Amino acid sequence: MARQYWLMKSEPEAYSFDDLMAEKNRTDHWDGIRNCQARNFMMEMRQGDAVLFYHSGANPPHVAGIAEVAFAKPEVYRYLEAEGYSYAIRLPANAILYRDIDYLLSWPVGRPPKRPIVFHHSVLYQAASWEKPRRVIVKVEWRQGQLFAEVSFIVTNLRWWEENVVRFYNQRGTAEQWIKEGKYALNWTRLSCHGFQDNQVRLQLFALAYNLANFLRRLALPRAVKHWSLTTLREKLIKIMAKVVTHARYVTFQMAEVAVSRQLFRAILERIRRLWLPPPVPDTG
View 1 (cartoon, rainbow, N blue to C red):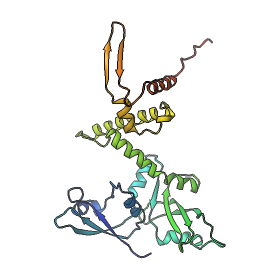
View 2: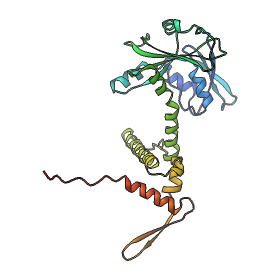
View 3: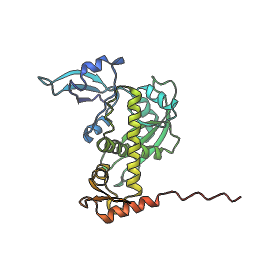
View 4: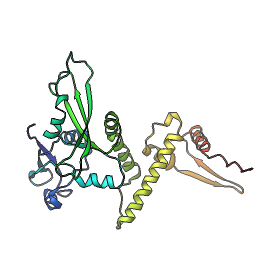
């Protein structure tokens, strides 16, 4: 496959080409992608492709340097395996991987159907920078009207069937949406403490708050409002104004019915009440 050239934009004040040159081994990962089309382009990158590092906010705008697409750092695999984490990571294609699946790259015999023809395969592969072989899942997809198959490689330590690994990997977009939801609803990227451990505790508290809010949404919201995002849930149900009226024997909260009606609020409280654990059965033995 011929070498391709990609234009990657980053502002000098955010991350400049000089910052890349100052990194260890002049290597770093590119993150912060929010545009879906840009993400799809990055998924098409292959090892050895050239990257034009473009500064659009400079005066004048210019290409600051040329970089090269590389494999994911082997340290990532070693760290995940040492900590007992499962992973499924996209792996750039190369001639050795294509040689192992050469028999899958011939157009299937017969009239091509309208639906894509998909083959899954598993190979044991060891890159030059790896200290041991690892399992690589191969997905080959033939589509009607295309001369060549769409091939993707996923390195993983999962022991699932190949189709299940690919299905799990394809859910990364959903996970990104969950991360984005927590970012905008809870602002869990605001780690303003000076110490690393302080920020670590703060992030864990944000994750706990996200899980509690998600449990509330999944288990306590009626079907009519089950589609609410965490931001909507926060603004309409949690962060609402109320007038507190104190009596001799009880306290009353008077809330406006602008966002949540009385019937809806009562239904949510009833669902929360049903989540209580039953009292323990006394031991009569």
